[in-house]
Image (cartoon, rainbow, N blue to C red; front, side, top):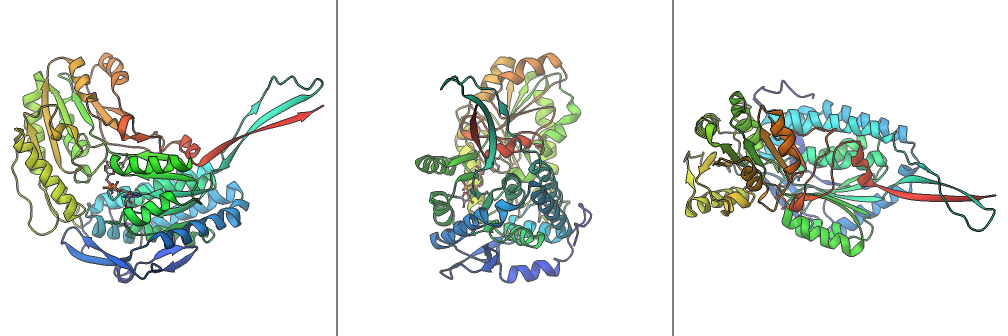
Length: 502
Ligand code: NAD
């Protein structure tokens, strides 16, 4: 079923979702199966805390089968397909994502907790669009012809060119905050480049990834081109990263896990892209358009209940507008309805898990203990993994609240006088993923954008990626960029070919 009107309430879960939840299985080499050990684990509905489904708990054996299946597909039918055939399959997949859009969106909201509006528009619609974008890239891979100056042996001439070749089997490891969309960010360019994939979704949110792999089969991708293996990070994830058959790892998740994966990848010289954590600043100048403050809070901070890697969680407001910014952001935060994601009127939804809820609550408690002042002090429903939004003032730069990722609906606001000092404070964390400056003065835009250490700098907006805009982090926010046609390079090797002739 296609997505319903994005802002419509889910009155009853569709039958396809109920059926799927009875027995989700992994997909290896085109076969739907349980874990070889038979083990399962439970995934929960964060809005209720109740068990949603039992999912295969895969281990190194299953990973081995999946990597072998991906390698066989890479050597076999997939490598024989023309770029235009890959393009057609990716377009077909995008259509199928849309055709099954409501099922996917409901599944995501039940599993992840997020607003059905975001499930429909981001997880489903924007994923379908990303497959279409990358479908176009499949037929535009190109190398270069190179003039060379090789002068030996005498009489020999040379002509060189580069070929772009798919790197091989890709291990894609995704986080729980945008499960289907993150899977699309990885699978789409990998397939466009001609690679095959083993996807290991986050243990909390594996369901839409399984459906995506099923839709790949339905679209006509040969068996083994897309495999999905569910399980814990420390077992299934670690086994995938270490598997000798994997040529490239693409990972989105926490900086801590990213470092482990980076080290393991280097041991085997595997190619690796890491999209990691963030602690994005929003610098608001006196001359900013104050009408944008609502959007700054709603989209910049609380989008996806703050579970966004580039959420603008550190606001630095210049003294002339500080009081106004504090008032508006506090009012917006208070006005956000807290409740189940199945009702799109609820803008603050449950956090993904009880564990993550405890983490966010602990960050708030630590902030208070360290001397920061909570402005809102609101409470959230007891049932489910909810945390009400919180806004802090009096936060010192060295506090954990300012330095560490909370990944929930928590924001700090700090006044500043001197713009250069604001930029220095904005850069003063280990992260460098996203940032924004808010001003109507073009001179400030031109002066300060180059000084901000972040992979993306938004001006008068925040937290809005686009498929054609490179996305990734500096410093400990990661290595490499996703999105944009150049994202294909992450999945291609460059081969120089040098032809001698007389
Ligand atoms: P996480 O690092 O705990 O887990 C991410 C994935 O890694 C999961 O699939 C997990 O099973 C797997 N994993 C865990 N340990 C592993 C190991 N030892 N070997 C291999 N795989 C392992 O992160 P999370 O809590 O799921 O996601 C939240 C984090 O992701 C936040 O830090 C957030 O900022 C980050 N994130 C970054 C971006 C970005 O584009 N930069 C986007 C979304 C989320």
